[in-house]
Image (cartoon, rainbow, N blue to C red):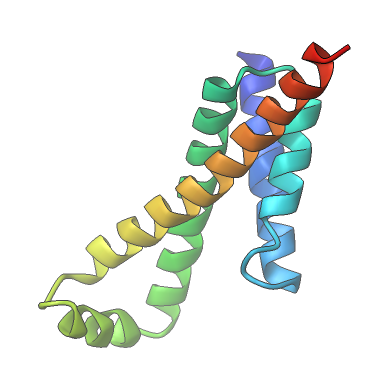
Length: 118
């Protein structure tokens, strides 16, 4: 359980740092690396990455939404049949969770693939 939480926090920190300073797809690379380094199976790696990505992307989206007084989320929500800003924040979190989770699972599967060939 400690490695799961530590890995999840490491994934969240590396995802935040890379997405802050690099392109939108940059969090994929540290997630693959952390998924490779941690001794997880693919399912556990995906779950850890999904939770880290979901929480991080949701929190960052919420902070951005509050800082601009919900103006942008309201306008984008109107484009998508009038959905609320909270639904957009949750949708952003799900997309981020899938991105980071699948990248961590790829790293874990890559480690399994490389070490099974030996």
